[in-house]
Image 1 (tube, helix red, strand yellow):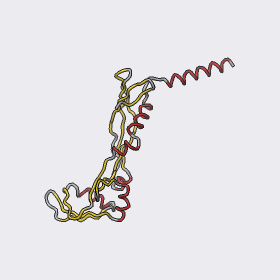
Image 2 (cartoon, rainbow, N blue to C red):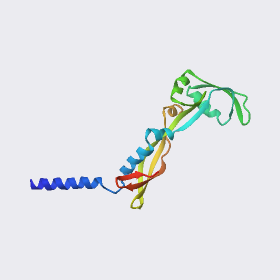
Image 3 (cartoon, helix red, strand yellow):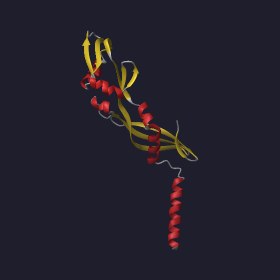
Image 4 (cartoon, helix red, strand yellow):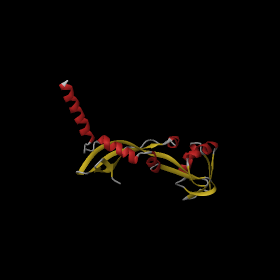
Length: 179
């Protein structure tokens, strides 16, 4: 019985001691980064987009024509290129039936103009932590851009991992991301 009481007290001390830890671990930093930078609102704000406009006899830069052809290949628009010149082309762009259905998930900036979310950030892992002071820390982590459903339809692939960093400050209740 005496040994059980001693073992219980030792375990309780270890658990309570762990709760007040002033060490920022990779897993704790990862949790805090995901909460602050990879929540649904943050992901929506960091989505890479493609935009286009439905138009008749509209003029676009020739660099935009390949993007429109991708949307055409996905079955979302019809595209007729008229009067190509050195720097621009006159085009007719219209939504297909599939495009009308898909456009419900797109962001409409103004009538007949849409932004299509094509990729979004994905957290991979914390790769290291430095502590320049007792109450400050910087975590380096990797992320990548992954295609949304629309991005997949356009043939996009996940990017290579990218390095990013986050700064943390220790408060009386634990570590928080510094903004």
